[in-house]
Structure formats: C-alpha cells, structure tokens
Image (cartoon, rainbow, N blue to C red):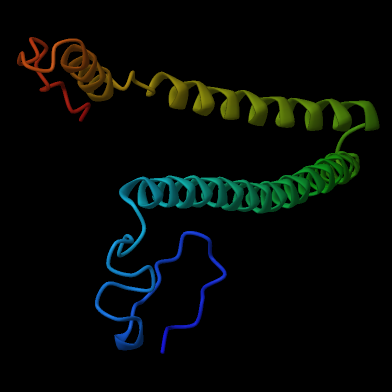
Length: 166
C-alpha cells in the first residue's frame, strides 16, 4: 500500500512495504527524487515564499497608509476648527475690551495680544530647533561599517566612541 499521491509536483513519495525495499521503480530505478529535483523544488518554494512576503509587506503598508491618511485628515479638520475658534476668541476678546476702550483700540489691543503670543511661540520653537544635534554616534558607526565593508579583515580605524550628547 502506498501513501496517497500528492498534488504538489515536488512532493516526496513515501514508500511502504508493498512497494518493496527498492520502491516502485524496481531495483534498478532511483529510490527518490534526484538532487537536482530537490534543489529546483527548494528554489521554487523559496521564490514563492519571498514573493508572498513582499505581497504581505505591500498589503500591510497600504493598510498603514490608510490609517495615516485618516489620522492626517483628522488633524487637518482639527486645525480648521481650531483656527475658526481662535478667530472667534479674538472677536470675543475685542468686543469685551470694547466695554472699556473705544472699538478700534479694543481690536488693536486684541491684535497686539495675539501677536505677542505668536512671538513667544516662535521663540520657544526657535529654542527647540537650536537643541537639535547631528546624530554623531550614528555617523561614527556608519563610517565603521563602511570601513569594514571595504576591508573586512582589517579593524576599522575610526573609533566607535562618540559623544553621547548629554
């Protein structure tokens, strides 16, 4: 009795006692697939695996992109409503100041207050940008990697110790 035939062209056939010790081909025939057949099967299966992994990566990237697009749209809508709310806040402040000052002066004071807030925000942003440093440790390790790739048997001359940026 033999194992059921597989539909996979590269599948191995399992010999049982009914086939005899030498298999169905008899004593002179090969006992199993040749090395060439095994290599071809492995190559085909590996190629299929890589192809499927690429398809999976594309599908996951597309799904992630949709999520990012939805998130970005939410932030844009929030920015529009925030801008409208800020404008209404300016008018409210100007109308409130109108109770104590003439109308043109109330609107001028409101504009000056918001310009002052914008200037403070710009200073905070500028200070944050000045704090950005080059990725020195990464640059050193990349130089080490390049040196090793050029001469893998020679130790790199660039030291991997860079300032930690603390």
